[in-house]
Image 1 (cartoon, rainbow, N blue to C red):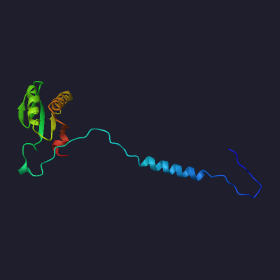
Image 2 (cartoon, rainbow, N blue to C red):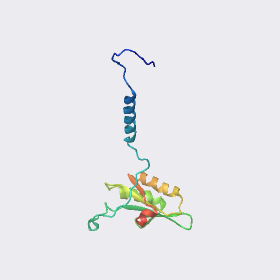
Image 3 (cartoon, rainbow, N blue to C red):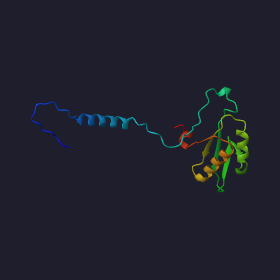
Image 4 (cartoon, rainbow, N blue to C red):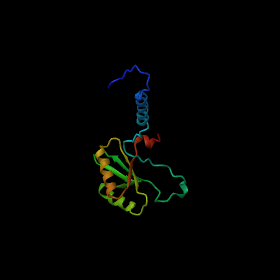
Length: 144
């Protein structure tokens, strides 16, 4: 770039770009700050207590599949406190969710279990037609 140093008293027609750069930097900072941050992770469903326990019917009742670690090495399964074998788990869940409008299931696993057992129940739930599956952790069970 060149700069003209004139001795004459004529009007200068050069643009001073320093204030324009300052405005551009301020706009850049503003747009960087207001960019929305997208959340990462999975949506979690937590069972909520019923609003009116007297009017609760079977369709509103939450389905909780409990997996307990037995001493024999094979886990025990329960659907809402009813014992179920692993082979019959798919048929029971399919029968329960066949007539329901809201297909939400919760899984409560024993902390001593391998996650592969819990993942197997999640797969069985998806095959049975469950739309949303939530995990009940020890903190959620304790009400924290």
